[in-house]
Image 1: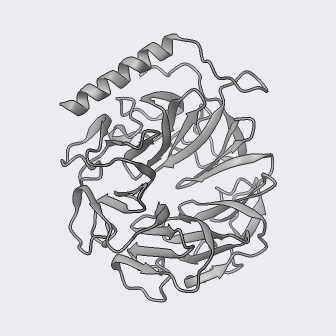
Image 2 (image 1 turned 135 degrees about the vertical axis):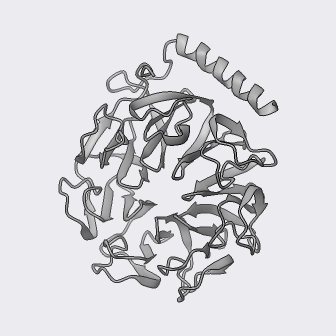
Length: 384
């Protein structure tokens, strides 16, 4: 009941906000300024400078959080404010607010909403027992939350040990991942996870059928194991069954499945140990999509490699080495979805490319885009 009251308050704030004119506008063409983006399973989310959150794309199980199950080809405003991160799994979504609380909505058949039940939720509910959270990530049917104290908590489906508590029992409330401390970043793949510690080391756990844990084996791990041979890592990102990491020297390394060139080493051979991505240097950020990868360099250029049709290079061909995404400049943030990519430029404009079967590009169509198109965020809400 308490959660429902909180949702009602959020909805009231939304109704008031919709009456007021948008206060924050992009300097170039009077459009709202996007500050960060997130992705779900064929969906996208944008946080605006005015504190509002917008979503678009696939909406099965109400995973956009707009109270409907209608797919959205253009961004619609959600009933949350002051959100830091929004990210989604197959049919659910979680949001981290700036106050350190975590909210969830959508499908809940495996306890992935973390509210102690298996009841689906059409609107956001707060996950009790989680506070001071600084980072969240979502796998297909499980989630991770990193607290300010460096501990990691997980919940949801656990058949490969991806919750990290040493069991394979599903959890409908957050439990602490064993053996991890001083963590600064977490990221989830389909059924596995990766964590970066303050000392620059990388740890993995969960499904390992495709060597995605990088420990030289194909054995599943219900608790975290160290990825040997990696040091001075500054950022991490998990794809479906592969990972990419950024070192402090600006180089990028990857491991796991490589059937669609997502490791960027010039081959399609899977790797059970980290291997360098070719021809990349001066990188400041990385983002793994489902079967492809992206990197952002210090000059604001975006590079992509892996499965075709989602690289934004104007072609439908896959690429075994990084290629520059044309038409983008001064990019400050990137995100990789199942089959589409997002980028935010310094001026706050938002761009997308790739598959669009569920409206995940947010350009008011379902047309596939092989090169970036601009998304207009902040338009009036679509009618149900």
